[in-house]
Image 1: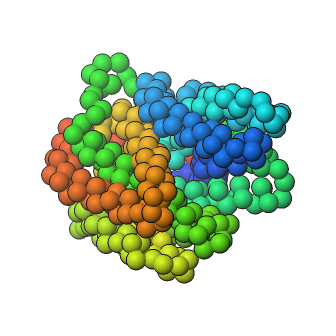
Image 2: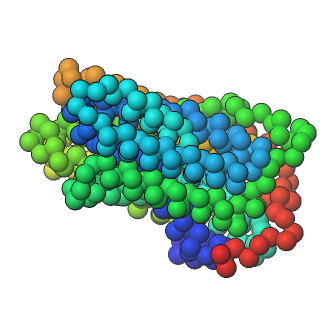
Image 3: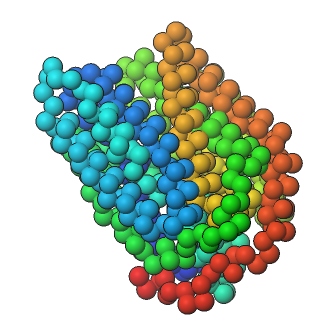
Length: 428
């Protein structure tokens, strides 16, 4: 199939409404960190308070995501996502209310505490959507096997697009009204589309794990550890890039361009992610991971030579070409090497490692930037890509064996998992 045919068949499996719901449902996660940073900083007059609040939200989400993913493997997605959406919505509303009511001179510790509770419950809609595609395609008897490549290519691009659109939406809201409004909008989106995603008919295709050995399958295999480490490196790329970009833009006297510059990384990444499905099947997933992570290293090196906003713009746009393909491949390999009944935990573990890498990369780049400006911050980016590439190359045999073992041990598992009376998903 051509890429257009692949995406057309993908949309035909569920209807475009499901894809729209899943995309809008992931925006609150993309908005919440920067919304908390801006709202709390503005209310308290302290960048430290804003940074701690945003960090508390991010860290608690990274910790809570694998726990929630494991629960979805045990009891199914619907009850877990409903609870997450409702409690996460209330948590963001509470953070907005406390921020709005904060008076100068008051202690600000309740704000990061509330943000931590909210962050722990904001669901990873993108990872849960990835888990659904295999049973969705298995329920359709006429689905082409390559539709799963299209599904993971789309999900990787959608994640990147959400982390471009989410902060941009926060920026528009802050420019029009008070910063705390961005938290309210994030809460409303989560309450509406997070809950809708949790209740969509596709959720019935991802049931609870049966009792017995199937659920006892090992999660932290050597293959998943290799992929998680690779995602940690990619996450460090995001964090260090954002820090270095902010420093360069500030030194150039245009700090307001930071968000737009960072969006260039996402634009290149989205376009490349959508194009991954066009690669021939002869280029296997393990080989793709080696190629894409090596491309990350090569395309990150020019960051050490940037000297202006213009040169940085070109470097970021080019680097983005390797980001989404690398992420798409790690998630695809995790899906192919993980027992189906541990897939929710595996996917959320990779997402958590991305967030952890983001925080680690931002922290390291920030410390080095204080010492030497934007160039040492971008050096962290280059080191992060080297870490990801080294893990991808050294662990390729381990991952390939895990994929082959999973294929051998579970023949026909995809269709066996699909209920005979699968609902007509395109009508909802």
